[in-house]
Length: 335
Image (cartoon, rainbow, N blue to C red; front, side, top):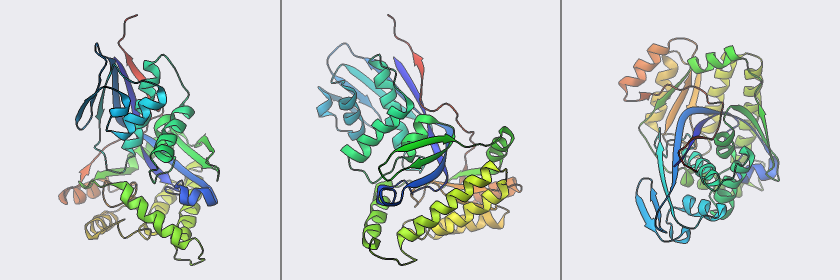
């Protein structure tokens, strides 16, 4: 049996500017961090010629072409495995919660499948292969942030050109500031799961309508602002201005909530304001919006914020940063 472990991620600045409808025209600059919420994938041989899959359901099929799960089917095809394999997945966090779990799943699956075949590939190839499957083959309305965060781990500055070439640079942040971030960023599960594809597809349609407009309230103008905010957030992280980083999170959220009517709702707005009234400096929903996890930044009053949101039914979720990315953590085969 082979076991891969792949982290999920928190976007820290510029999130969403990697979406193709924006990035292919203007490029992207964003800051992303991997965290110790993991996707585990196991791959083991079968004595028969079947493929058996266990995720939220079970499939037993004769070949890769008959697999219904689109990510697994296309990963098997790309790596070149057609039968005689059993695959299981287990996650620390449910899907549809904004932490990039689907791309952690795919990157971890590719890592396990390549290793199963006796191939060790680079983190860059894992991220690019995952991007080919989701953005190319399956035409999903996503960008490359999640794939690279899952593959590389760490707190990274990603620069993506209009031609989709990605440069990965670790953020120049001190060990002490990393610990301060882990202490001061409070993550809460709202209890709401949702499909990000519908939200992102709506943003893409709006962007296409705005393409010929210089309207300052257009979705493209909002993404310009988000990219600028991300660059300012990066400067704060690298200059130890963490309080100002938290303030930029609040500015980001006020801009992000203009992107789509599905970004927030009355309950989410109430929770956010409650956290701010309890001492938070800034925050935002993680991912495409509509639910999932609420991330708040506060330099004190942590217990007060946690108590206030806890009374509303939100679940505090402690985390640390991950600096390893996707890796093989177990090889139980005998040779």
